[in-house]
Amino acid sequence: MTIKHLTRESKIWLKRRSDQVMILQIVPDGQSDNTIPNYALFEAFDQPQYLGCILFDSKGYWIYDGNDLSVTEQEQVANFILRGNK
Picture 1 (spheres, rainbow, N blue to C red):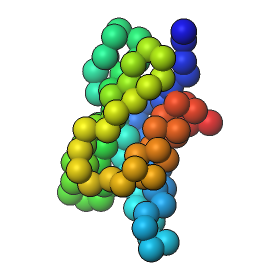
Picture 2: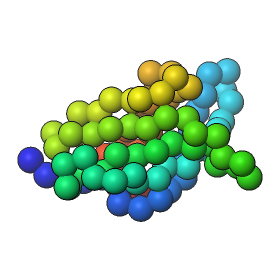
Picture 3: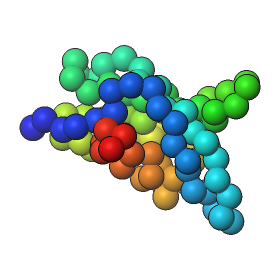
């Protein structure tokens, strides 16, 4: 199964708890199975803070490796990546 995904570095406005917004930088980071990259996540500021990474498999299943994003925030990021920034 071929899935669409984000192919270049991008930024997303992430809706956080308490109606706050954070700008998140998403960076493709290597290949997990030669077709789907993993993604490193950073706060998009002058000195970006690493927030973890999202790993995908060829079926579009994902897992977040980090401690800074809630499940809802992780889902926002994963959906953005799988839409390919469309």
